[in-house]
Image (tube, rainbow, N blue to C red; front, side, top):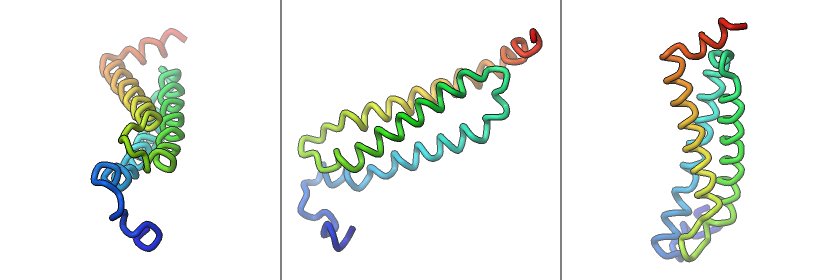
Amino acid sequence: MMEAHNALQDLDDGPRMLFRSAHIYTLLLAGLHLALAAIGPIWRPLYWPMILASGLCIAGLLLVSYGFFMESFAVDLNRPLLKMGLFGVFGAAVILAINGISRSLRLGQALNERH
């Protein structure tokens, strides 16, 4: 990157900061995918939240990746696809939190005992 883009010194400060920090979003999604994989076996009683959160993570990863490669050179600092990908990550995190609360209230066990 240093040789190909001259350390981005030709860009204004705003786009330069966004371009340099965009990889953090990809790392965030990778961490969330690892968290989903680690708690997957625990979610058997409430399996549909796992599918929904995983789908949001995959869609978020695709949008964030596309935004990283295509929207990083945006002059007006508007990155709508990356923003939608981050909303998907937020949605997956909310689903994880709701599922964690329901497990602590033992709602998942009550569903499992009926079968």
